[in-house]
Image 1 (cartoon, helix red, strand yellow):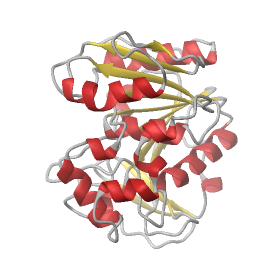
Image 2 (tube, helix red, strand yellow):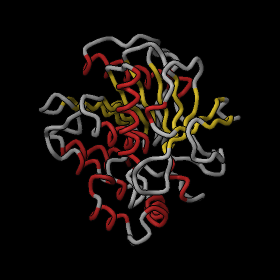
Image 3 (cartoon, one colour):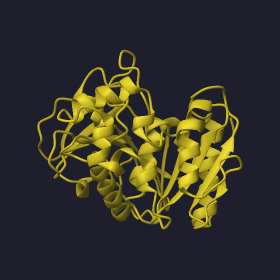
Image 4 (cartoon, one colour):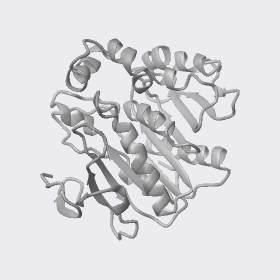
Length: 301
């Protein structure tokens, strides 16, 4: 994927079996493409990271945007796109983003789509989603992810008023996750900060969803689905977030604003992504609840 930064240059991604297009701006994204394609977009913000996505246009009022979680770097190559086949079961266009934060170092398994000190990649991605929705004619935007991808879905949805985040067992504060994972990210992305706590002091809302969602009045909607069999995330991430939103963590439910719902339900033991059927079902239920219309497709399996 070594393309020069020029408008509409193309190549091929063998792993994802799609054409790669390097674009000059999000306005050049093709909404009439017959096949899914990958795009690489240099951003106007300061910083070294491109926005890299995979787009599958569809005649629909709904755009579903996905984000990936932690990657075993010895197993997976960049860019990584998750849930592509699963989203094919829904009557919606799909826009999958890779976390280019991971390109800062071969030893970074998780970047939470945070970017660097100079570049907030979440803000850059939000701008692209907004452009795609406007130009593609999508009225309903749902952002989805699990674990670190769930963090990103909630962070970026907050930048898109009226959008919905569907987040499965996310971290809600980077500083409460595995220390060495946060440390390698800090070393690469915020080299003048000694710890994730010092990063949070300067950029609280970029690394702590509890700070981002502290104001009761939020611009977006959220369906936060927590695996009750993931004790570590229940204790360290779900429960503190529930308390910020004035929801009983033992029962979950809707917050007082009617914009954020917590769903506590048993899945597999430990910290694992949801099954395909559960993933699709919660997207459809969120679509029905917050947009007031049914999203077609299948949620079996």
